[in-house]
Length: 283
Image (cartoon, rainbow, N blue to C red):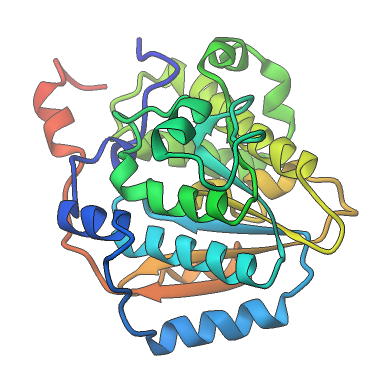
């Protein structure tokens, strides 16, 4: 049986964009000139000023997505509008509150209990440090590993979504594990996904400040309006959802987000191939 902390293939992607990660991590690395897509996004942020919560969905192996997130954090910070940065990449209960803006990267990683194996710091460090330098807290939002087993066994989570949305989530979990999950594990692993969304939403809600914006950064599957973190928010909380999309945008994404930020395509890769080779037989 798979362990409850098993990650979808994109989260287990091999090291990518090393040169990009090193470059953006260095203060002296020149920023690229703004693109028309960047200008359009900044105009959208201008229209959304004052939104209490902004959810950003990424593809984990697309370095331009982390650059977009860093740019968003900086845009809000320079206007004194950044309340906090909540990230999927660290567990709830960990955060940088109490650290000064000039804290070192090692201090920040320690405060967040950073998991380098799951989330390479070279890729996410620039996003995190942009918030720290602005004096805004960075808060882990992911479901702690110690609570994942309980989530797997919590059948009450099955009632959170309408049947159609729950079925789509279960299908996404099956596909995310390359069709290799035993059928008996699809429902429990879907509960973990739901519990992660609930944890992200609760962390973001607790960080809200009047007149400022909390930014939540997570995989695109955690930010959709109809099945992910927003479904755990009280109805009186206003929020916006944006997702970065490599190459040609999927039509279905338009129903889940308020804004699609286009980024260049990246080479296609079959993340399931190594897992299928190791699999002992049919799922």
